[in-house]
Image (cartoon, rainbow, N blue to C red):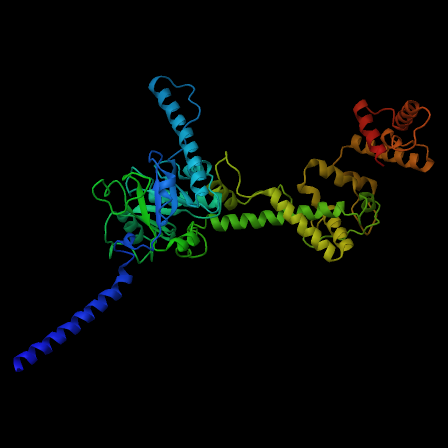
Length: 524
């Protein structure tokens, strides 16, 4: 009996130990679920990625409700030459074949994208990084894929060898993608390259912050995934032709062959749709911009500077066009007081900042592509904002101040028209600057940007115009007469009007100057 009692006690104790071990193992499962065969969990979303030669049965593929997204290969290295002139033999044939393949591949890409989106799949594209200019490759990728804001974009660095884009160039590529799209790409790479970037995170400050698309064909990556840099993967490519065959495969995709790449997420289907397209950095950069002070700070500063410049120009144009000002003649006649501006406009012809020129050269898009800023949009937004400000505040005061800032000289004696081109400088020469003391004719002639003969012509036009207005003898231009009641002989009136205008002009004016003078007087 004592022996039986002892055996029973030992059995109970062993049972408790076994139960405790089972409970600990069960508690450890969720912690290991991201690293050990997560594709076996039915709540984990699946993403398929393919290159152009993977056959796809879209109807069959979408019967698997775990398949949430589809990522397609877009571009590969640099864009091919579209012009093969000057080449011959095999070189010419190879050039033409590359362009033909490029055209067919893009057509297939666009067709697949339309099909996938129509079927409710999230869409993405990747660029295969090769040696060569990384900025041109980024431009090539954007021009090829034409990604929308809801589409994932990724840079594929297969390995850290000379066959693929270098990691330093990959950072430049990512910067250029940011300039073109306003967001960074996802980084696709293998286990060894991901570990290298993690080990040298201080050198690759941008790459180590990009969302990671991890490629490793193992059932268990516990202790191997670089969690110290990436807390989790955005996607894990766990299956491809390397570990999937007709006999054995980690996960079979319906409607595709065994050589297609398959990825798993740490999220369920709804969570992955919400996180797509992974356009946020894993960790913020040290100063909110890349370590080299590059694209985000540069583009933000450029946008602010452009906005200020457009606001300044739009404000002056809107003030002149404001109905409260009515005519520029009021400014010329001195009916509107023009105080000196507190902050005179700097001439646009000032020498550009060398640092800014360097940044433009380093970070600007290729010459064949559009600039990241939209001047028309900036101008429109600024004009609307200025209009709202004028309506809310004192429009008369704002208009006067804007006109004054445009026409009045600054503290250094320079005119605000100095940066507006030679034509506007000539207009500024005609407009008298407000002054406490009268300006002599000689001093006015010295200030003028017009030559002596040009000033004489303008003076003659003004005198003829004033004489005609005082005598009320100068007939209205033909286009004005045509809007009034028709005279008995409209043709005769036109001829008399032209004759009288010509008679009012100085006789020594050339024919071209006479035409200008006629137009000048007609607009007075």
